[in-house]
Image (cartoon, rainbow over the protein chains, first blue to last red):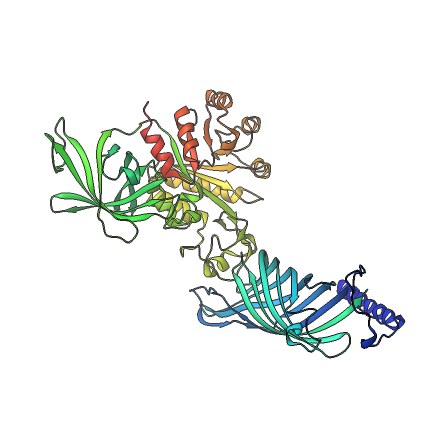
Length: 223
Length: 375
């Protein structure tokens, strides 16, 4: 709880400092911006972008239900959430970290009249790279500048909960990867709305899910 | 019929020598006879069952190479070479006659269309030697027909050349000793069911109801495993590897119970508690009564001596350790080496003739090199 509170406080501070910096910068009209020149060696701007969202997931690989269970019911759907912090440099390739929480699947059934329920979920902890399909070409309204592909690799903490003759919570770590495609729509100077289709694959645990998410994208800080 | 045979037809696939060995499986009052063949190429074993057909003994089954996925069916007939002429075996050999086992083998699902001929050469090496199969018979990763540490692979172990087995003992959450090798439930060993984490987090009821090993077997209790060894096999050695940390008294009680059962059944079965770590040594030292509790120590010679263990089992990567091995044997100890899977090292360790036994995932290879060894 303390960690969550600290995170919120940190994000609020970041947001306020971002507004402060923004307020102190002189407003430059678009047509007055100097054109980049080949001899210009200044770098930037760099931006820290925070995305948070949620949606629907579908477990997209084989799953195993013990043959001893009767009257089984399997659910492959879940409600995932994700949090991504990206560094947008002054070139096309962006990188950052992603985490979140994704339901993989659950099943329930009966054994000799007793209920059994298994729920499997995963927390990805991934290093991600993202790239818009176009960068300097076109305008902000250009479709290819709003479309981006993202890929990442790292670890999944696979979590299982068993309710049968007691409750057992267990975790196992698995290497894995993700791939995603997104469309980002600007709704403010610092806020955007994105739709993302994503494939999570925890390879060693053989867990994979396809997710569709709506994300709020906040350009938190630029320098 | 047991012996070392020369392979003529089929040598390109199986090498030029083969070991033929009978094994038995007891089911109640019934006994099933199996003929195993071990060859020196790619850890090959044959699993054959004899069936009398007309006036001949027909051996049917399969061959398998453990180092890859090669497999095929086999059909062989027992013959004798009498006055240079091949004829069906009549049940006894006249002086000068030679046993010949020949027939056909297939490759994967192909028809049996390759000739295999084995001609008796000499008897098996009679020297006592322990061929111990790791994980109750072999590894799941070697695509054996039964999962490691299952009751089914214990029944298969003799056919893989083993005279004894090593089993991995852990405790469930409610204190039931079971057989399982790894630290966690994982897809290497169990069928996918969503359950993860340490086996010790689950009760025996949860495991026996919801968890199945890769080939569909239940995780057996230690008692089920030893019951199988005593009632169904001719194995003469069980090495209980201590994978748990904690009190050893339950395992000691089970070890003593099945030692008595074996004695009552007229079996000379040794059930030994293996001590691979200092924690296991501490658990052993904490036992209130150590009578009739034979142990095997995997640690160094001084610890082995201090515990008064009757078996010392160093890791094979420490090398032949000839001086230490001979010194321990001179003190009356038995010396095994583990877990040796490299065929060339297996051949070398056996030819050096120092160790009393080898623990291996490839017991067919150990059996082959042991039985062809000429004294």
